[in-house]
Image (tube, rainbow, N blue to C red; front, side, top):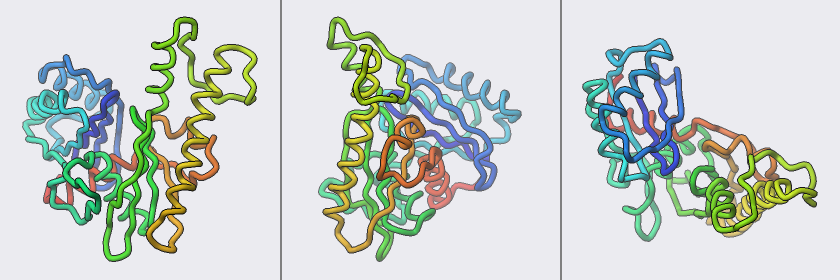
Length: 261
């Protein structure tokens, strides 16, 4: 079996693959203070809860945008499974082209999103990934998979948390879909501003990206990430939600880089 880790600044998503099938997955807090032994204990507990053992793990693959966590977590993977994880980054020999001005700065999550979108959809795609930041990954497929750039904007919870942190009288608010544009209570006003504000920002940016698209193809728009299920239904431009797209991209990367499981 393969363990795939998408290490984000807020959450780490873990996927367990049996062949090409995602057999189990879970989300962990990206906690810099965890030691390798603590990470190992967490992985072991989740595998056991899912009905599996660390002895079943034949390979591990990691994509990280949180360097303060990466080494400790990788050491924890090796301690739990005895498998040294493979780290995916912009130097990895993958069948995609990073067609941007500074390719070595492209985040590992965007790289595996590009790989997954190109292989799964086989058409030009905009991947909107709702995480700590909301990223727009622009992918073309004519002549091979190509990441041509995109957009990075503050994530939903990042914006909401900063709003509460920097204001004296605005309360922390559960992010529930609003029902009216004119909020009657402070919490409703925040929900409208954060959720519909984000949805309208996504729709507007997608329209601008499409207007600049380098070919006559109209890219499809897919959403992924932990908050995709909350925001995507509020958007007009998002066509489908693939919550496990990044994990699938990691599985594809693992195979392309020669891992066997």
